[in-house]
Image (cartoon, rainbow, N blue to C red; front, side, top):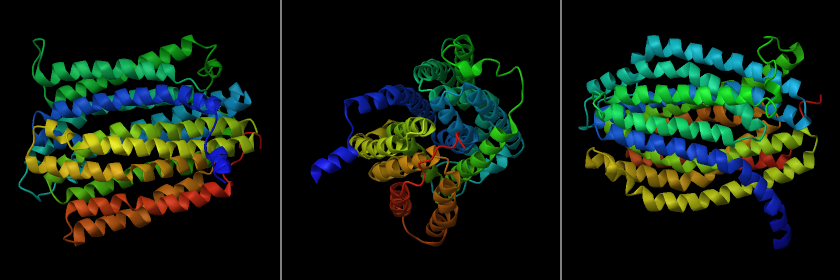
Length: 464
């Protein structure tokens, strides 16, 4: 029995070599990005609680934008991966065009929204509820940061169009290199501009925003130039701008499959922002503590997030090539590998998490609260890794309507009302509220297990 279970859940050396060749550059890229964000966060945190809280709120809003961009390219990405697996580069070219149109649309809408309603959105997170911090100052710093950060929206949208397509061909080194150069530039500029080094004025949160905008443009230039120079490695890019047209059938197929996925990503990210707003009703100390906690959590989460992305690439390529059973086998083993990997990450995060908040220049009550948030997030990580893998499994086979129900409907119908009631209508400590909300993930684990086990997700969608 154990032998059969081992064969079912554990792959051979070739299997893990393939995963690592794909995953390691992606993990390294995101580790560097997260680590620089981590250092960036610490630098802003050295200025004061209000500055840190204002930037944290804006980053929560930008998180919704980032996920919306991810959703806008993800629908076409399903087709792109399968077209590549099939060897149909013309089809992949049309998928790329669809990505470009959709990501620019999201970028322009977001630019207008943040420009005209940014103050109102930031204010939603600022409530009196503790003796820590000044919400008027937090709003001021948040507005300063958001005003400059809007210049990065369109470059980010275009970059993700290119990067997602490059990854779908199995090439992850160049996106990693571009990201490394961008984030290291961001880090250096952060230090210079935030604290006023090399004879430049001390700009504080404005300096952090300027550094990020410059880094976004640097990453864009590297990725675009490499893609167009290396046409032999990116055959889909040949003539991609010679015509704006997308065949009606491909456009219709991507739109039908991609729209639920885009709406799902947008609603899910919006849902996370609403949940953060529910927590913020308990005071600025909670906003600051959650910012500290999420910074280190994001650093550790990259392992399961990128392994989940690998599922969409590897399984998607198998499905596009018509290898249905191989796709199911690979998915099962990758899902198991992801969860086991995250158990080790949980232990590591619990060990180092208690020391991390002490780096910040903020009140001790904020640091103590952040430590408790970190431990809870670490314990929930294996559950999140399973549901994340489940999401990408369903998506790889084009089951975007099911992913919509699994992700967004669950979030808005159950999770948000549950969090709202706990935060607004009970006297439970915020730590207890946070724990209960995080561990509702168990419900999704059970649902996801049966959906993946059914195997109905495993289908080829480019040979129909």
